[in-house]
Image (cartoon, rainbow, N blue to C red; front, top):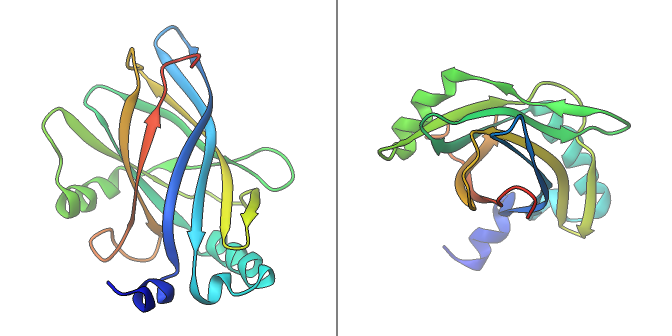
Length: 176
């Protein structure tokens, strides 16, 4: 892929950064952190373009697939909401077949899917084309050490087979 091809793409990169973690209900892990997106093209031409794109992004909706260990559950996945409260993502088991068909499922793992509920996500502009969203994840049972969780995201309209943004969340051990 050329530099020109990269510049035409809307989303260049994705990063998860854990900031706080704690245990809950003896076996669960709550992680609070941020997800950062690097945008390009018309969406990031100016700060006003970026802000307009973020409104459209939330209106258009999005979905997320996470690859976790069999027997684990994601109890909560939520973004901070503009104003107060949270934008809670809703579990959507219908995404699992698309995730498996597109990416496969390793032994001992399983895909879980979540879709955007409603509302505007609160964001911070880190640089002209980099936006950060606050996110909270609750998973049970927690691993005793760090856990790697592959993540794929995309807009609601369309399938993961058509396109997705890959990422990797490194969940810390509780209290780290």
